[in-house]
Length: 130
Length: 367
Image 1 (cartoon, each protein chain N blue to C red):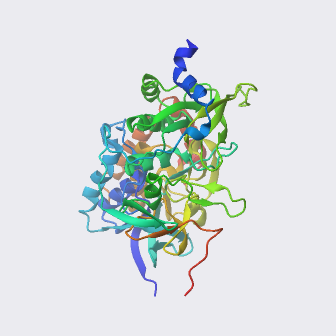
Image 2 (spheres, rainbow over the protein chains, first blue to last red):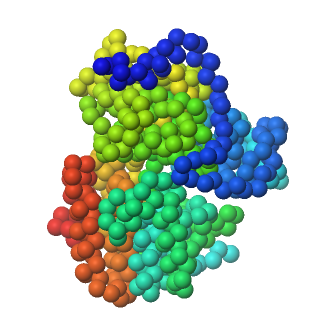
């Protein structure tokens, strides 16, 4: 009985025998969905740490990065722990990045624009001073 | 020079509560300003793909994502209602009744006779080893990424928490073609509606009650998780730990009200666990201890969108009538709305909410 109930889970246990690193991020954009249709905006190019990436205009920068397989958005200032997406509504500060030279931008809500320069920031970032 | 804009009522937050409050204020003829930091209305409705329950007045049978447009159609026809998107309400100065907004590079001051705070709630974290690894996401974030932006959060998700959010988001992940490896719930039984849990069981997702996540595995991103059984005092039963391969750990362990502005406004606050954290003490018409401040929706206690729309409407009617604006059959409407709220809060899940609301309501129901 228990085996039937947890068969799905048992598969997970079996998997854990394999190196966990085998799970490759295969993060893709959804196309067919039973309920939703996703807006198809204009494709724009931006850079992430110098690397060219494509995203959809107006989507949050974090969504575009996630779709491109980027999950580490910064490292914590003190202990250097990796930080990613967490709340998606601009309240948790996990996703602060430097965008077009401005540090501490909440990329989970900041809309993507053509030509944006997105960079991971060091520590608390540096304010651009003219 | 910073402009000072004057309005009768300012509403902060355009989620279900703020939209309903604005509509009620707008109908009364009050000069009303609705502000939200996002570029579009709806708050968290924009990711709620499921059909609502309740009565027709609260849009039963309508999907959450369709509701903002219904409000907007009516609000856009009201000349006394102004809408501001992309404006972050950054402060409220109780001594002058001035609300400050950060609108791109501009700083805007709004002097409002009444302010309705409908700022919603934020995801709660859960304490376990490595809970800061990228791949540990709030359930709301997973919903936003997937339902609003059409981006899969990952391939294999471990869901933590069996309240309605955990159950619904699990089902939405499956709809999006993502595998949900298991759902863990520390309590002995599920917290949400059976109808949602049944969908998951039919899809073959194991629901592990009396289980918790002990640690996330992975160096820089989540590669798996260790789950374990807990006893009745929530302690991990040694030897029950097992590893699950997953690349996302989704936390659906509740929300906490976003009440910063209420603290700034000097409102009397109370810690009410049943409502998710600190909430403003209010009267039955949603007025806070600062008489210029009203609270609506989850920022007054975490519930869900239907009750948020009702408390928003109550706050809107009360704020407008307090300024002398005429609301047709205000008393009858308010009693009907309060009856609707009571109906939504009936049932076992509602018991806890009702106790919380009672605790957060000023003695005797009025200031």
